[in-house]
Length: 314
Image (cartoon, rainbow, N blue to C red; front, top):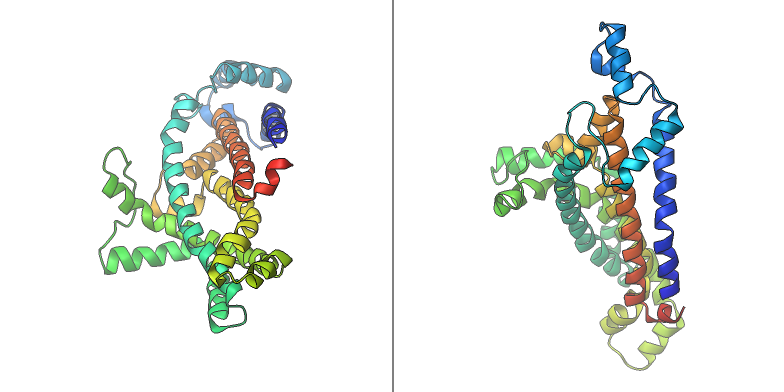
C-alpha cells in the first residue's frame, strides 16, 4: 500500500501541470480582450497596446504560459489585473472563509447522511426507511438558494436568532463567526447529506447481505455490533470517496449560497475574476483547488487503509 501511495504522490506534479495547461489554454477561448476591459472601450489604442505589453498579452500563448509557470514555480502567482493585489494574498484572504464553511457543511452532511443511511438499511421497508428516503429525496430536490432564503426569513427575520448575512472570522470572534456561517453551512451540507444517505444505504444493504455478516450473527453477536463493527466499516469505503469529492467541490466555492448569505469566499472570487477577465486570479484559484482535490484523494486513500485492514496488504 505504501507503494500505491508513493505512486499517487508522484502523480501530483504531472497532474497539476496538465491542469495549468488546460486552464491557460481554455481561458484564451473566452471572448473579449482583457486589455480593452481594463482600459475601457473608449480608451486610446496606444494605452490599450501598452496594457497588453505590460500584461504579456502581446506575446504568443506558449510564451505567456512559460512566463506564468516560471513565476508559479517560485511561489509567485502574479497580480490581479483588476484589484492590483497579489493573487496569493487574495487566495489567503478567501481560502480560510471557504475552508471554514466547507468543513462545517461536511460535518452536517456526515452527521445527518451517514446515520440516516445506516438506519434506513437496517430498517429496510419500514416506515423509518420510507421517511429517510423521503427526506433524502427532499434534500436533493430543494434548491439551495431557496432553502437559504427560507432559513433567513425564519431564523433571522421571524425569530431573530441568527444574523441574516455577512461573515466574521474565527480569529476575530468565534461565536459571531459560527453564527454567521451555521445557516449557509447547513444549506450546503443538507444537499450533500441526501447524497451520502442514499450511498450509505446502498452500501450497507450490500454489506449486510455478505457471508461474513451472517457468520457474525451466527456467532451470537448483537445486531448493532454486527452492523457497526462489521457491515459499516466495509460500507464506508465508497462513502469516504464520495465525501472527499464533495468536500473538494465545496472548497471550489458555492456561488449561489455565498451570494445569498453574502459570504466572501472562493465562489465569488472566481466568478468575479472570470467576468472581469482577470486571468491570474482564475489560474491561481483553479491551481489551489486542484491541489486541494489531489490532497483530499490522498487522504481518502489513507482512510481506506484505516477503515479496511485488508487493504494494508494490497
